[in-house]
Every structure is written in structure tokens, then in C-alpha cells.
Figure 1 (cartoon, rainbow, N blue to C red):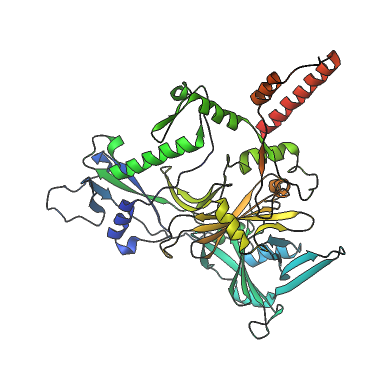
Figure 2 (spheres, rainbow, N blue to C red; figure 1 turned 90 degrees about the vertical axis):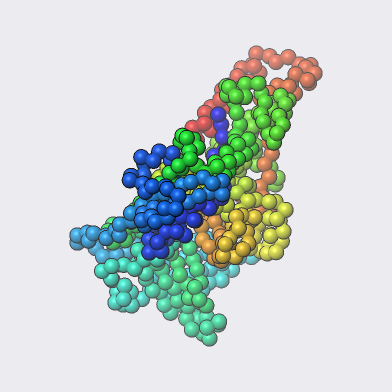
Amino acid sequence: MVSTGLFRPTKAIPLLFLLFSLYKTEKIDDSIHYYVSFTSDSVTIKDPPTLETGNTELSDDYVRIMSKNNERFLCKLPQIDVEVKKNVEYSGATAGKLLETMLYKDKMCSYLIDVYWTYQVCHGRYVIQYHEDKMLTGQVSRTEFYLGNFDSALTASTNEQVKPATRRIENEDYPYYSVSYNHGTSCDVTGGKPRTTDVVYICVEKVQHKILSVTEISSCHYEIVIMTDLLCKHPEYQLSEKKDHKIVCWNEDAKNENEAKPQTLQRLDDFHDSTFKREYTVFTDQDPQYSENTEEEDGGLIDEKDFEKLKETRQAGYILGGVKRFNTKESLANNPAVVHHTVNRILTGEDCIVGGTGWWKYEFCYGKHVIQFHEDANGQRSDILLGVFDEVVHKEWVKLDRHARGAIQGNNQIDQISQIYAKGDICDETGAHRDVEVRIRCATADHSALSFSMHLTEPRTCQYVLTIDSERFCEPLQFADDYGLIELTQVASSSQSAAAAAAAPVELSIDEEEEDEAHEQSDEDDHDVKIHEDL
């Protein structure tokens, strides 16, 4: 069975919120992670109190709940021990010395290409933002502002703490090391005062000095968060592993484990399972439940003709359509086999890109949706739908600011496309739907031509920006129209080509030499297919 890898968005479980509302307030902490497990076996809950009528006195470790369907649950709350981080004997270099030795000495710089500005952090020297425009004469006009210059004395005197401070980034408390950059370009908004920047370093394994976000926290005062594995050498800056705590709920009325979940939750799970299986799964001829070439949908059946048409569509490949506006240089990512794979797996939404470094992960399915999710120890996912793609909504969104949205042109190529994914889940804080701007950029991800990197920021409450970098986007982006949309043209499959050939009149025969050439071309096609499968 071949499936798209899409994940279903699920609603929050009311029972879970009820549990937390009954839980002692001192036991609730955003940094403590919980998940709920339902069972029909009372032995799972050791020494449960009696469920006699009128017995309402329970210890703090138990909560008694009744669902709207009169299902009785007894839930055992986990004991949360305060974890005291043991002091680790460490005699290595301080955080400042690690950065000085590895970053400052080699004069390394990190870059972030935003919609309009490019941000450049040259570690231990300066921070600038700039924008380049190519004139008709071929000259490049550059607008540039210094956001700050490195102040070694200030950093050394205020930042070497025994215990580093932490801050919440993507719902995780990261220890950080902050470096001050002062005396930047004067700012008109603040009455001519110089711009300043706090460069915040956090430990992220296997990431080499990558800018996570740039935020203007006040007028002309910036904060730039940089992920680096250098700080991971220092034990105090390593991110503590989070433990998932299980809340066990015993369903007294359930006869077996299949009936342990609340009925409404089970119906919701069944609905999503059937819906997404029906909409996003393609079945092969070998699947016994579909051996008669039928598929159930919304109370009806897809007949054999439609089923064959569906399979035919899936079998046929796609190529980039529309007008190619710029040429790209030869590279591994722009190899035809890689481009073919990117077009047919990523741009069709067949494969989704998943990333994220903390509690929450992010799933992006091009042209379909963006989901924020967490998977607990039971393998169950908690999903928040950040937005779905609607071409009409997207085009109206681009029209509001054509300069910063749609296709963004750089030096002789399209460097970025921006798309809006709207109509996400309702945000409790704003009472409105979530939405996310997705920025797809032609950029090297983690020093690899074929990999993807992604990070998500939240400039405003429940309004997100998801940035995805990869060299694999460089060639497809050159086909994007002004709205940042990439047209895909379906290529006839082998069966369609054979049918067309059978219908066409044959007037000439193929001589032996031409036949040999045809066999050679067929062998080359088989080789291309193998490359595609290896990818």
C-alpha cells in the first residue's frame, strides 16, 4: 500500500482538560509533559479506591470522572518528582571561550535571507542588515544598516555566569549565552540613538551556527537567536531531556481494551482514520479489501472506471510547467533526476517535510497544509492545524503586498516564494483561525545540497512564519509565477502512450538500426527510474 504520509489533525480531548482542571495547581507546569492512556484492566491502577456511590473522598493521586455518556473513569495521576539537576564536574572552556575559539578566531558569519532584508552576523565583529537591487546598468545598489558592533569588554563582564539563564523557545526552556552588539547605525525612530542587538546562542546538536530567528523587540533593538552545536560541549547549556508522564484512566464499564476509550473519542478517531484513509491513500491491486477495484466514499462507491482513472493519475508523473523565468547553475540539486523526484514527491504533496527541535514538530505538505504536532510515548499524536492552502485566498493575500509576497527575485533568479496557509484551528487567545506564511527558499540547508531545514516563528499570537531552505527548490522556483505558484504538467503514463500509439495509423516500419536505438533509449529510461527509486 502506498500512502502520502499525511497526518490527521485531531481535536483536544476534553477529558484531558478536565483532568488538569482537577489536578493540584502546584503540579501543573508547562515544562512537564503528560499523556493519557485508557485501560479496562483495574490491575493497572494499583490499590484503586472503591467506586461506591457517595464515596467522593479521594487522595490527590486519583480523579474520578464521568463522561456525558455516563462512562465511569478512575484516573491515577503520576507522581512528579522535582528533578534536581546534578552538578556536573566540568573543567573545559567557558561558553564565551568556546565561541571565541571556534567562531571569532575564524571570522565566521551566519546569514538569514528574509523577504526583503538579508541579515549577516559576523561572530565577534558586527551584525548588519542589507538589501541589494540590481540596476538596469548592471550595477548593484546596496542599502545597509549596522545593527551593532561587538563589545568584548561588556560581554566578558556581564555574561559569564555559573548557571546560565534559560528562555522559552518553541516550548522548550533553552539555556542560552547572550552577546551584546552596540553602537550600530543611528536610528531616526529613537532620536538618533545607535542600533543595538542581542545575539543569543543556544545549543542544538548537529547544527552549525544557523540563525533561527530575527526579532525587533523594541524600536531599533534587535534579538537574533543562533543555533550552534558548539555550546553543546558545555554541559550547562545542553537541553534537558523531557520525560512524558502517563495519566492512566481505568474505564470501569469497559468489557475489553477495545472499549476502554470514551465512546466520543473512539468515534472521533474512527472518523479521522476513515476520512484520511479514503482521501489520501492509494491502494494497489494486491490489497484484498480492494481486489474488486472499488473504494467506499461518502456512502457511495467508486466504480471500476473511476478507480482505474485514479490509479492512472497516480502512476503518471509530473514535470514543471509554465514559463521558466531564470536559469540555474549546474549542481547536484539541479540534476534532472533530483528535480524529477522533488517535483513528483514534494511539490505534489505526496511526501511531507517534517522538522522541529523541541516538544513540537512541524509537518509541511506543499499545497495542502501545515500541522504542528507532538507524539507521546504511546505513539499518539497531538495535532494543531496551523493552516491549509486555498489558491483563491493566497492570491488575494499576495495582492495586498506584491513586493514582499509571491515570488521574490534575487540576483538573476527567484530566491524565494511565499505562500499563505490559512483557516487553521481556532486560537483561544485571539478567537480567530490560525494562519502561517510559508517561505520556501533556494538556500543550502545544513551544508547539504539535498536536505531540508525548517524553522517556525510566531511574530504575532497564532500567526506564524515557517521558513524552509533547500537547494532542491532552486530549479522549481524559477518556474514560479508572480503569485509564487508553480504549475505542474502531467506526463502521460506508459499505458496512455500505448493507447495513443495503438489508435494512430502506422505507415512506416522501423528498420533494425532504429530498433536498436529504441532499445538503448529504453535502457536509459530504466536507469533513470532506478535513480528515482534510490532517491
